[in-house]
Image (cartoon, rainbow, N blue to C red; front, side, top):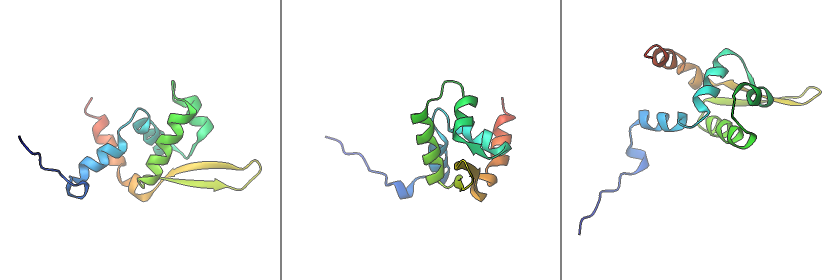
Length: 103
């Protein structure tokens, strides 16, 4: 009988946690679009072909909880919500540019 060592989450590589945060069907595309301008949910639904409300809202929530996007409620009529890159998100822009140049 063998036993496996259990690796705790707090001992994993920071890059691994970041890659996990950015993994998913729509997250890289959402991030790329957020670089250009603030994001609105309805606009994302139109721009990301094949996306749906549920998966898109989950991805936005996870990016917000991960500290890469900030949710801003605009209290104008009609009331709407925008998502902007946080300072941590902006710090990742050069990394994304470098990854895009590898294709």
